[in-house]
Image (tube, rainbow, N blue to C red; front, side):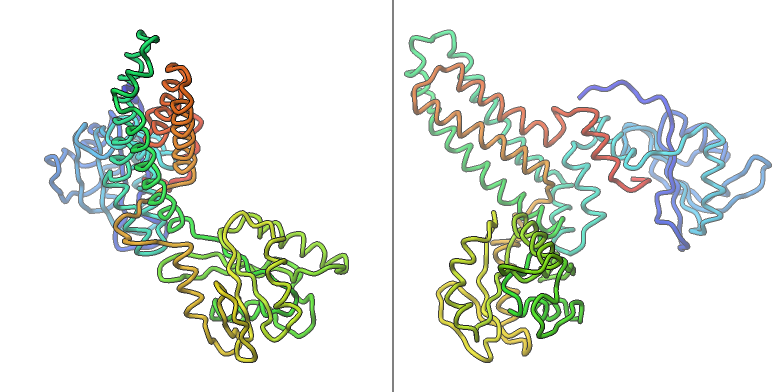
Length: 446
């Protein structure tokens, strides 16, 4: 990507707000060197820490600290970068920040340093997003997945797919001039096998990216079932605290209750919903409506059944079929200390005694989290998954058109669609609006 040079110089406090032992001011842009000479007297040697006072407009020291100089393009942003490492008091940092502003810099927007690194070809867009994911990681597994993407593993796999599609496009588009021989040319070039290989590789990448997305964003698990099946008790048991009110009165839970838990490093949003039943009162009916909305968009539904209620047990299969969940549903029988129905594929627990809760956690981890080695998981976002899905759909259509002996131009067009979709992941094809949306979610100073 070739971009015009950025003419302004930006500055930000790169450390978190509040008191701390060290505070960092980061400056990037064409005037960073002049600002550094004014503040320090002279610039340090590149990539060497230099202890100096930071001087104000009256010649007085604002602070004493370390200065680090990175001459472009050998810097994070690809521009001249100066970092000032001083004491982490808010007043001191604000004084130093104001001094740099007075010397001609402007306050950086959220994510603007990473954006400049992207615009100057230091990192691609997927790597830039991995920086934010690493900062926001809520578990060791999520941090490791983000680090793999930041190091370029995700981008490399996307690029390998892209290169294979480009090679195939070159062959097919070169064959367009020989329309009367197109079928023979496609067979000679192994196009059918090459598309199938692309689809396999793409599906493997989708699995790694989806698992990484779940590690980063977390998963939503909805506890659903009839009134008094023990949903609130299960929420409390999994959360380890009395979050939901538990009574013997049907319809106690009338709104969606939310709790965050961690299952072996997998962040989970656990939702307790109103009991599903016919002919509720008007207030309870609104709770049931909200419950069904959450069920429809959950990553997994735990459908809880009172094992001691024969009517509920016999109706469980039919009720699960009527849920409308687009994802998986786990049938769980509660009150297993009183009775245990023997149905294949179901789990038996007791929210009161804790029986079976470890097995339920392990089950949720397996259906929601990492399958196989965590080393294969890559930090990814929903937009990446959407782009991979569109690439997969284009390859599927290309395979169908090849099988039906459709025109060679139509196959070439589908491969172009797949190529463009993959290019969106790394930033080869992006809009300014998309870039603004992505980098605005970053913290200031990064």
